[in-house]
Image 1 (tube, helix red, strand yellow):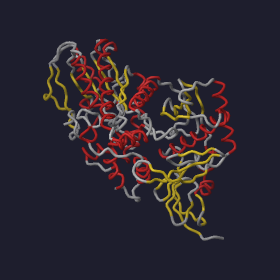
Image 2 (tube, one colour):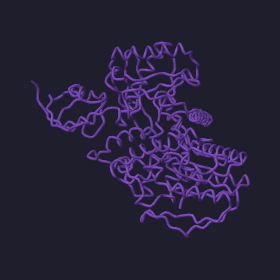
Image 3 (cartoon, helix red, strand yellow):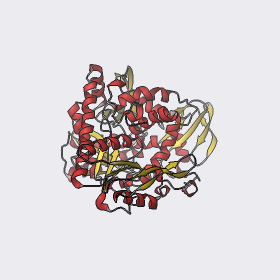
Image 4 (cartoon, helix red, strand yellow):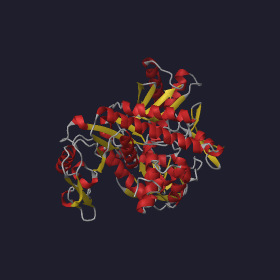
Length: 538
């Protein structure tokens, strides 16, 4: 018998002391408890750092078993499924076939083969069947490292092998292909969607949802990237190193302005008088709304800019979540009757006493904003419930123009490693939280799951209602955010629960060369909403 070590083991249902032989892989521990757990264990936290199940225990450790419901493990599942998909494509179509993993779409990952080669349904079915064979064979993912220079300085690049197929991935994998039991392929547009489970329900495939507007927005973002010669992180780093980044920034900002002008033109042509703007956290909605108002004025329209936050119900009427805390993101937080009465009155040119919500006292205050508009004057309304029909059910549909704003990241690390849009948004929020609210990165990460939960309920289900979608991402922005987020992430210690997520984000942000001179970023840029210096922020 070998030397024994103790661990504190958190199975997700209980925490117990547990003795193992020194050098035991977490995989062996997970096997002992898997039958008692609801979902397949895919990874583990060892001393607060997410590790592959092949991680060996050498000393006393805190070990937490993770299934797909954990955000980091969700990415591990997607990454492992992606490698299986790429191997299956190359097994069916030949080893020189190029696979591009583009972006998330329709509850899956949108991919293209040989830059948009259209495949028959029969070939797609053959690829899916090959994937199922690979899963059935339960082939191990083998890891080695090689040196490379990316971002700033030397890096050790992880190279995974799956049979005779080798590929680099900037993240962890499951131990073997047999762990990836739920997936599907769907022919779509110029490519294939690799579908995977929703992390909230890891043991079944979700109902398919087609979002053509998101597909069009991602395709447009890809075209913008090609226009600037930036499709991958290495391209952006090259532009920064060569001194061409100032021109890239100017082109990216000009593309934003052109798109906003096009949306304003649509509103003017359709003679809409109620413009509703929504989007998830850190989308840059405030900057977009202000720039849209300017473009509406160019069209001879004098808009009134309003937010829905001043229409919160009184504090004692605010709904609570399952933990008994105030739920300020639920639509029932809005005084819908008052909101609809006031908006209709403004449209009719009536004098209205608009409320101002005192968040400290938890009450609406009147008499501070009395407005006398012209009849038919356009209202631009920003709020997270803007696309929910319930918010404006008292306003005629013919008056409404709905806009969804989100930073849809098309820039990827390389052909097979995508950058999740959620990561880009969280880094934006982290910088803004620190600058304007004096929050630590730890606090931003801690709150992120709750933010995402609110978005899943109140924002994402209504994105398909939009008349226009504005992609607020800038292809250069992560290189700007790097210098702001890096010290915040480094400050999170291993003892803090958010450490593992900080480690993941640090590995990611290190891939970028930094844009150190903020003066080359215009003061009306959406990025200024987060790093400071915006002409639209008080």
